[in-house]
Image 1 (cartoon, helix red, strand yellow):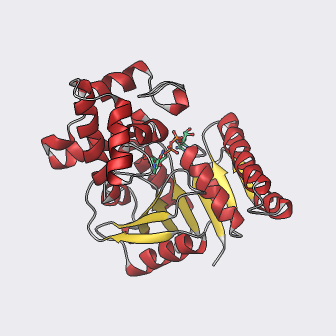
Image 2 (tube, rainbow, N blue to C red):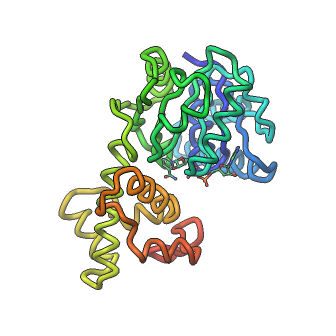
Length: 282
Ligand SMILES: NC(=O)c1ccc[n+]([C@@H]2O[C@H](COP(=O)([O-])OP(=O)(O)OC[C@H]3O[C@@H](n4cnc5c(N)ncnc54)[C@H](O)[C@@H]3O)[C@@H](O)[C@H]2O)c1
């Protein structure tokens, strides 16, 4: 299965999804708000593909063919003929609802509309459209070209056919899917990582343990490939804060209340790797 894919948002996740889909033969339209952001996304894709070529994982021809299948744009209307749209804009309900409201107007009646949200209930995003049965969560992981998991999320009204299309897409681009049957905030994976990160940050901010030792405990004690604080730096302190806030808003469960340190870091611009400073310096 390969067809026409539109990816909305050319940031870390959107460009990664565009890349793996193009490698699997999809014709991809990659949309962001500013041309320079689109260009940066496509540059990132080239850099990633070059790395795979250097490691002899793919040929130069295949890399060039994948880039040639991607068209960058600032026009949302370019999504009009897509079979599948994957939204990967900021993790804010209002931003995502705006995009889905517009997609509902623009896209053909058979298009499947997917969101890469990490924590916002798909049902709330789908409610911005007149076709909630066609809306589904496809939660990919960062970096998309390396991470094998896709968490498929059923919204309250997602149809079986929509879920099947999303599964065929994700498996077709090389991912293994798990299905989240009930549309809870944070789904399965973000619930788990948020609970771990919140507790990790509380332990660090109360002086119980250093970030280095906490991450070492998770790596050597639990066999995690990466500690939760290094993971937060990679994902983005702001992204984790938003995700945790959304889960807390939905559940009113105090264990998800964002710790003060996480809030202050985000306010100060210590966002992790992307800003050069998070729990670690880069
Ligand atoms: N970063 C991660 O590790 C990760 C993992 C899984 C899921 N997610 C989710 O994926 C989504 C995107 O995350 P990201 O890390 O790629 O964020 P990012 O900040 O790197 O990229 C978001 C992009 O969306 C663009 N954007 C905003 N509004 C737009 C619109 N209306 N149309 C087109 N583009 C628009 C922004 O300009 C930006 O380039 C979020 O929902 C996030 O929660 C992130």
